[in-house]
Amino acid sequence: MPEHFEIITRTMLAFLILFIGAKLLGKQIIAEMNTFDFIAAISVGSIIANLAFNLNIKIHHAVLAFLILVLVILLVSFISLKSRIGRNLLAGNPTVIIEDGKILEANMRKMRYSLDYLNQQLREKGIFNIDEVLYVVVETNGKVSFLQKPQYRSVTKQDLNIPTKQESNLPIELIMDGEIISKNLRENNLSELKLQEELKKRNLQTKEVVYAVLAANGNIYIDTYKDQIASPTDQE
Image 1 (spheres, one colour):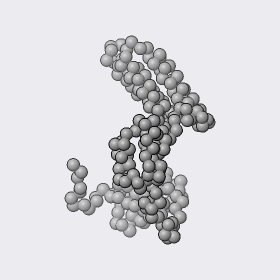
Image 2: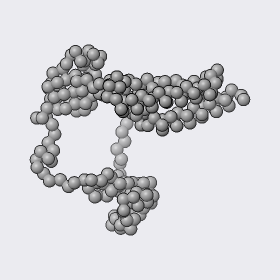
Image 3: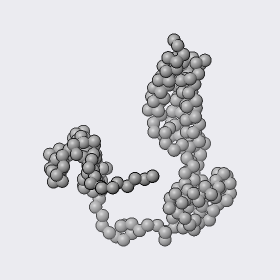
Image 4: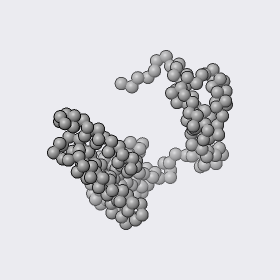
């Protein structure tokens, strides 16, 4: 087989194997990664790249290495699920770096976390004054979680004793790209006739609707192809 045809074949095979492996491993492998996830992702990428382009490596050897790695990742995931000690060993523990508005320098040094990066992370979450923060925790994936002091937290309806309507359902997509999603209607005991009546009230036909969703509060949000906006904002 000519080399360029072999590379094409191996690349397509590598993609297929990677796709199957990602399905087996689940969403965690493509989410924000902790230390083990990072190592696993690098290893998977290295094996797949060699399978696609390194003609000196036999295909079945690369596939075997990939399968072994997938089994190792699944085993580690199982250990993390069943054992708290194993989970802490493999993924690490969250680390508190601010307590009651005070920076814990020892923990910062242990995490090799700079003040500049800490301030950046807080600013991204809308915090510009460290004194407003009760706790800041560095999670195992390197991101920060924070808890503001009570006097700086946003007021909620519960704080003001304002009654709220109970929402027990997730939003339900009704129309997408001008087509009714019949499966969602059936599964949620919704009537297509009532949906059509709602569209008729707004002088719309199904084909004119880009997206329609039934919100948890019972309201229907509808977006049409024609937005009636004379000069749409263009972010440059």
